[in-house]
Length: 318
Image 1: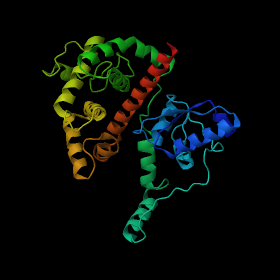
Image 2 (image 1 turned 90 degrees about the vertical axis):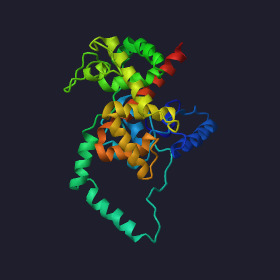
Image 3 (image 1 turned 135 degrees about the horizontal axis):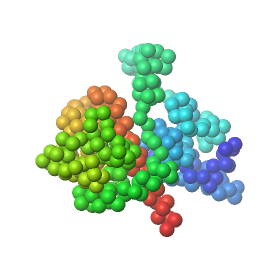
Image 4 (image 1 turned 120 degrees about the horizontal axis):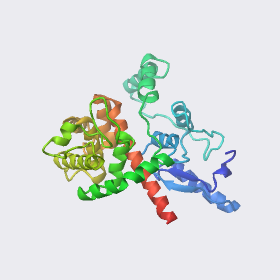
């Protein structure tokens, strides 16, 4: 792309609450006056941050997003498959800054001290950049032809058992993709087996009791039954909405239900919402058990959105 007009007719994924969304709406109005076709706005989930959307572009899940210049330049160091177009700006002249009360000298001192000791180039900054950003299990492209073939080969089983255990089959397929890339031959170093990466001991437990999980269908069945047990036993509070029941259940599948229950309790004690994962309990999770479970749940949600986008496109073709 060489100019802003090159965005005409292209799909751009934007959160409706973002400033970028309104800038593109205004831009489309000016395009209309010039007789230029509009930019096709695809509304992104409000649970996705700019970095999440850039990650999805990097994975090839979505084609184009718009973010602030400083964010694009920063994440461009992490995501090697994105192309930046700084000269194609939907808005210029804006200012972004932290703001706090002028009579807050202690806060100002703490912020400035943190900046000096944690920015890139410092020991802490470099460790954080490498450990949590460079060396991370970022989302993959679920929509390339090979991955779609694997999805289509297994989707009927996901539909069957998701209906039996009252789940959204796309959600569970997304979890399975995160666990094994839908590869039933996979076995982990701790002995987890198959497409759902079930431990034989978990499958044999009285709450699951599904034999021979080396068989594909039994493995998928056991995964669904265990997820239903986790959700019903630990995350059935009426205060938790449907999406967050899924997210907490997935976190428990990865880190264990007792650990997630403790994290929810600590979140509440710290003024965060214990019934909401994104930007609430996940903050405590990152602090207490590290980035893995946070990225795990985030990836599953992105894969779920990816599958939904694919489903919408296939329905349009029909």
